[in-house]
Structure formats: structure tokens, C-alpha cells
Length: 207
Image (cartoon, rainbow, N blue to C red; front, side):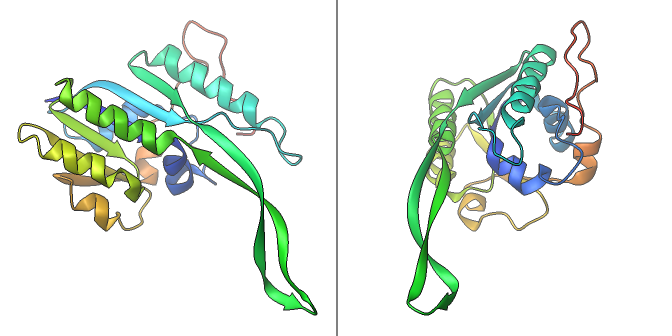
């Protein structure tokens, strides 16, 4: 079965990778473990955004760049598509208001574009007959409508892979032919080699 996998990078990170030692992740190996052998993985489309350094972790962008270069050198079937971050000031209510102070101004960072990009690619590839099965790795309900439209094409199947062990989105499950989870054991056994063969690219220290 011709299969393309659509990975919501930040949903995968916050749902399954954050706080683990398994960030040097081979996406193709992971998808192969999660899916049945009858799936012929033609491409893994990875949707993310460029991160910025913070005072507490200024090397975030360098680690991300090393990982993306490693992933694409080792797995040419991986395609990377970028959204972007928006930073803006908002006022938020205090959990414990004191005196006349009930709100505080904070900087909110939001990742924009990845869910829209994923949905557009899922739809477009379906209409172009690029796959028999589209597999969505996310738990973001914003993708539900794209899944519904693809599933209306009777010859297409839609799979849902939920990052982590949490409950899958009901909106996404309503339009999935099957569902799986990304679990710690799958992450552990789906790591890129270090270094990447034929290159000097190595896993960042302390990552």
C-alpha cells in the first residue's frame, strides 16, 4: 500500500519527545515500526518551524539545524516544510491577584503554519493520487476537516498516529480508518546512527 506520512513536528515533540533522551529520532524507522509491513512508505513529510534561542538555552537553533541536516542526509525520503513563530505581548490574569493587580503582561510565542501546511499537503497529495494511505502523526484537531475530505475519496485510507500515550482527539478519530500510538519503546529503537554514515554530523552533546 503506497503510504505518505505527515508529521506535525511540534505535536510530536510535546506529545512524545520532550524530556526524553530520544530526540535523535529516525522518523522513517519510527513510522516503519508503528505501521504494518504492508505500508510502503514513499515519503515522510515533516512540518516544523525554526526555533529561536532563549537565555536559558541559546543553542536550540544549532541543535535543530544539526538534527534536520542529519535526518535529510540519512533519510532522503524525508521532506521538511517550515511554518513560523509569532511572538506578541498579551495580558493574562494572575492566578493569585493581589491588591489592584489582577493581570500581568506576558510574551506569548505561537507556532503558526504547520497544521495548515500539513492539511494542504494531505489534501493535495490525495487529489493527485500520490498515496493509497495518508498517515497523520498529530493530535491536533485542526486537521480533522482535511482528513474528512480525503476519506470521502473511497479509494483512500487515513491513519492516525497519536504522539505519546494520551487519548487521541475524538475529532481526528472520527475520520481515521485506524489508529496507533508513538510509545517510548518505539522511540528508543528508532534512533539515527551517530555519526551519520559518510558525514561528520553527530548528535549534539547533552541533547
